[in-house]
Length: 172
Ligand SMILES: Nc1ncnc2c1ncn2[C@@H]1O[C@H](COP(=O)(O)OP(=O)(O)OP(=O)(O)O)[C@@H](O)[C@H]1O
Ligand SMILES: [Mg+2]
Picture (cartoon, rainbow, N blue to C red):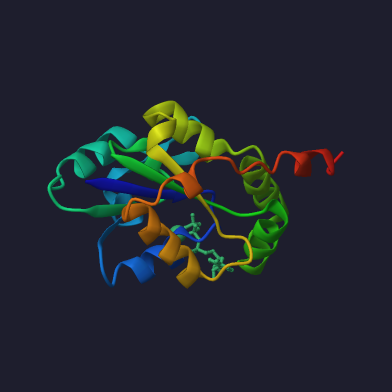
């Protein structure tokens, strides 16, 4: 059973995964990145070879439970997707604290306000396999407990319904 733990940068995937790691097997997609990254001269940027990453994930033993952590986790061949969400205002603060540039903050906050990762997850896996956790105002420990709730079959509370789209209107 493969569980994706995904979300916009800064929603807390790594912080939550580090807690879950005490009890579950966690695969950090970042650890594979060196092997699967190539440089696109045309676009002058690094590109992750998702197909190779998918092969790596596919090679995991499906009889065991693995949590696949990373921003691309929902693009992997997983059984369940858990999307960490964060209110755009709080996400902006978290990213600023991390020293992100203004443009990068804006880009990520917009993606979060548009529910981009949840939409992609539903598109790839269907809505019954996708769950959301609101991390706003919660500690990583509280969020890790909610991940465990989902793993223990508590599903209704976590069906995708988070909507921050009214935040977008405030920017214009
Ligand atoms: N629940 C939370 N409440 C407040 N701050 C948090 C929470 N979770 C994480 N943070 C803080 O937000 C920042 C980003 O967290 P983290 O690195 O876990 O995010 P991420 O989703 O793994 O990001 P990336 O996609 O860039 O790897 C960190 O500085 C962390 O301390
Ligand atoms: Mg991370």
